[in-house]
Image 1 (spheres, rainbow, N blue to C red):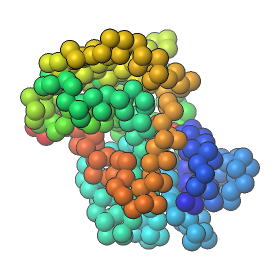
Image 2: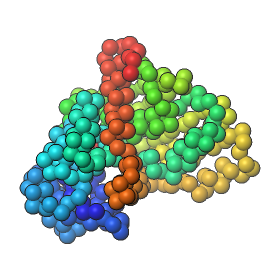
Image 3: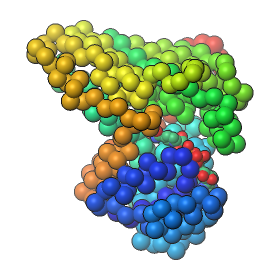
Image 4: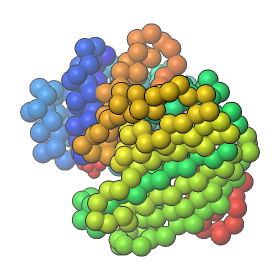
Length: 340
Ligand SMILES: NC(=O)c1ccc[n+]([C@@H]2O[C@H](COP(=O)([O-])OP(=O)(O)OC[C@H]3O[C@@H](n4cnc5c(N)ncnc54)[C@H](O)[C@@H]3O)[C@@H](O)[C@H]2O)c1
């Protein structure tokens, strides 16, 4: 698979590493409106640098798949352009869009163009998360009662001042759309269809347009309750990125800073020593909140493209967290419960 990337900023090293480490992936070219950033990536990888991604795609018809790693609010137009005008597969960083209508346009565009659209949700590939999902599919929890996600991270003013787009409603959003979108995705993946949400947002410690803190209670079609607590106002360091599931026959919590550490694994049908054994074999301690998942995610994308099987997280699956995000913002604005 021959890759091109658009956007050579902070997340690009995760993609470059994933492409570099994959036997069947090759980086052909990169584009960034900031020539210095594109040149740095070209210097590191040997690919060709561009400041205009359209020029890159016109010059390199051999590129199969394009990773869109630009500010979030630019994803819809760029992804649609790459799919419709250039006919290439797209991997788009999270969040795929900031609005469900834009996500719909992207999904329709992929269908019209006969290409695949993938949304990066690398945390689904964290080892403890994979094992949790297997336990859910095997019915070990019985009825699911509650799912809780907590994001307690530190993003100070210096972080938001790194680039003009950060913290703006048009291009980024706040903690929910940028950081906690992964955790909304995990909650939806585990608990199914949401039917309503009641939310409250705050901006506590930084001067940005969007929220740095949010809480929400989600009602699921199954009757389960979802609880979301997300903040970038945790000081002085990152404290936690976690997911816990409570069912009538078991409870699991995966914590650490990036949903990577198995903290609690108990079922009424647990074998003796199961929790300790899983804690040892599944534990991962990443250096950053990005975790380890990009490599596994890109691997799943390549498998999907080469075997023409369904993708890891396609546009429709990626849209689910955007719909919930939209409902949360709407509830916080209205001060009432919002149906989804
Ligand atoms: N999966 C994850 O865990 C994860 C982590 C961090 C960021 N992200 C996502 O990745 C995206 C980028 O975030 P980042 O932290 O790398 O931001 P960044 O600001 O560091 O990088 C964005 C880059 O895009 C470039 N750019 C802007 N407009 C462009 C255009 N029209 N054409 C080409 N390049 C353009 C900028 O010059 C910049 O270099 C965001 O959507 C963010 O939410 C995902």
